[in-house]
Length: 165
Length: 467
Image 1 (cartoon, rainbow over the protein chains, first blue to last red):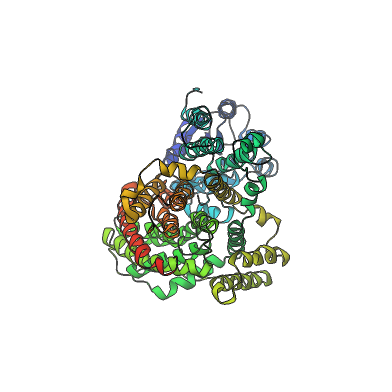
Image 2 (tube, chains in turn orange, red; image 1 turned 45 degrees about the horizontal axis):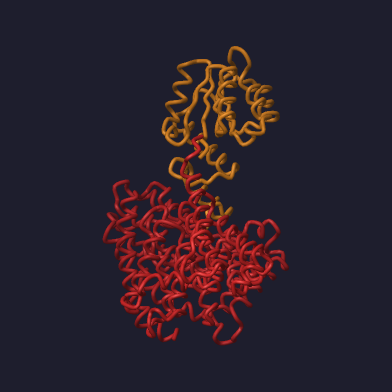
């Protein structure tokens, strides 16, 4: 079975740690990777692709030394293997232009303004990963417990992903 | 990647199973029988170890049959020389268009329309209403609704739909309330049992019906229901009491939301009418005499003709389930025609078991195997053997082949001990509400009591219908 990764990108280690803590309950089903820059994120993403695994969700800051987060997300969106990857911008400093660019050119799925609530972030992560599983047509059974079980059941009902045998 | 992983070992084992019988002469087995034995062994190994999906194994069976055993196959002339009359390749292909497959296809068309217009959800709300809001009766209501739907739709799709109904109920209950488990288990238990109720309820029924038809025993849709529904009703009530005993509720009452939006668009109304009409014609087969397989083409053709189903809907039918069954039926053809089934039967002296002993042995093996592998596959492997037993006469005069076939078809649906036993079990398990040991507890009790009841019914009640 392919692994589905979550990638968190932020240049501030404390913020990165907070994000990771907030979504820690997903770790068992979705291994979490962290990067402190776009460059580091690129290396991780390439590694995921090389191993034939999947990237389910990116939680990405915008203003970072080096390439900014929006540019990284746009770049990611262009790669076929990551076309279903859910992209969330977690930032306090992205201006209107950058945000619009992320939506229009990077098909941004969600915007989280800093500071955020822990419950808010985990809910968003679950929603986005549920969408990822559905859109990637992955067998949802291993993920029912950690994600939105109702939506995933509905998906089995309508798409016949699991059938009688 | 390691070369000798489970997958490659299973493939190699299957190939050995296919090839080895061709080099070992078996006494009493003609060359055609040896080829059939090879195909049978390979199929069994592939189905059990699953190095490839089970439906792919079914397709391989048909491939091997047309190449190796048919009149157009590679060995047709040498088989004829050995005194065997090869079957037409059309017989093997024809299994995919056999009446029983068409019957299932009719069921798939209805189910597809039901899901598209939410008929399954509306019906569930309607069925649940009379059961009120007392936990015990809600549990019974859930089981009954699930069973009714799974009798006409796939057990798996019904379970998935019902899980969306029960999750909000479970969320209301205290984390420590054992009743959460009753609710979560009510769905797979109801779906597994409900599948027994009609010929189209679950694929193993198709294997049983096809075998019966092969023996000239034609069972009407309504006759099957007469055989099966009493069993299903008894089983549901018992399973309900068992669940409540194992996981009793700690609360007195809770809310369930039964608001249903009924789709009143023209397409939906046509879907309701065709659904109702088809089911009505099926259950009244004895009155009007039109075979259920003939009626089945009504939804198959009418739903697309009236634009209720579009090409996307037709593509999304579970075609692989049909191929799985077709391959199973096809394998059964060769087992019978090459004399392999009788040959296997002759390996054992069955007469000493007596007809009741035989029924118990076949039933227990089918039940046991179905807990571990696909229900359809375990019926596919065992039903031809029961046919062989009946045809060879080795079992004695009082062995009722028809009833043994139905018994095998039914008991595989009672297998629900493990999460892997059936897809409904796997779905219920994946919600995280129940643990494997909970499922095993209820599964063992329901399964063994169900087995005893099935046996009793098959001895006392079914002989009224199957002579």
